[in-house]
Length: 420
Image 1 (cartoon, rainbow, N blue to C red):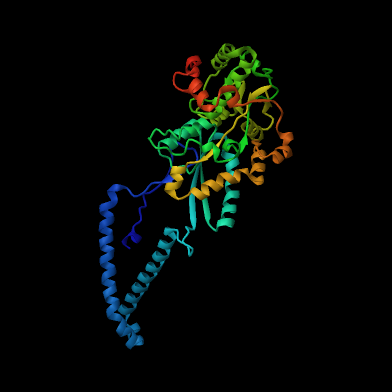
Image 2: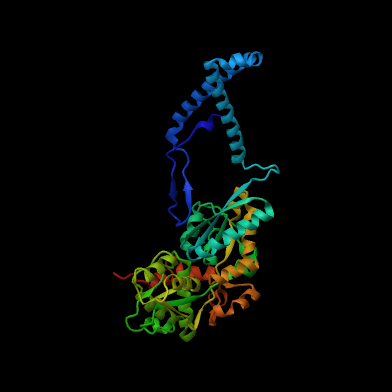
């Protein structure tokens, strides 16, 4: 009961160093424990003394209430007792709320964390309130959905290092696969996690397009134009960004189709020679191009390109190349964390609802390509046709592509030389 009276006024909200949006509250500082214990003992002593006074006063109050209340000292004591009773009642109610109890034994509120990649911010900021309303209506429980965004590879590493994500919605399968082989030694989800939901646990897709400045001054229309003249290219670092890995493979697939692997390596080497700076994530690269004014063309997610147009009217144009990757950003429940936190049901439902008609329309409004055929037809005019290359058919899946191109000592390390 003494803990009711402890308040640590120095606690403060601090940014998680691995996330743009996630915040955490730090608990009591360790060196306060002695002070807290002393404070508890003093409060217990005061409460015990007042309780003894109350036990002696009750008979007098009942025998002659008017006489008792006319005494000024007695009135002051009575106010003190009423204050203690009020505090006790308040604390009892607060403790019920803190336990999360309801009459049915289910917590009144559940907290869940979605660790996602850079360009999903706007989509999940619309989807989360929709899901919260659905969960409240169907389960009678408040859902606090928290969102963390960053470069996909970096986000995966953060979860491996201990960030308690209930679900991950990352840019590519290899970043989620890594959670099965966590660097902490724990298997945070099963090896067959992609079988849990339709379309290999991919509720929406995207592709890679070009964002150029208004009027397209460098006349960029397809991949070949990226390596002509003095064109400078902005793209994120494929070591940390899932979107950047899709960029790399899109360029490789284009050149490979024309001249095989040798031609692809030469083409991609020349492309990255023209990259003046590489940010850690896709959103960072967008900011570098749109706000800092660097580069002539940005390799970017389709939905991110449209967002840039909306935020910067009459400044940029989108160029859709002849061929690009079918980008499949999958989702998964981090089963070990959800089991530990007791959030398995809400985490599973949260991802299942991404396939609902309402969520599919939200995805389309944010320029993600829906997997629901009816919704995709409904928004057909929004998404230009182009040849989409599958990761499995062209590169043997993400596990092989990751090992070949992006692991330490892979093709990217071989071809990339940072500019001075």
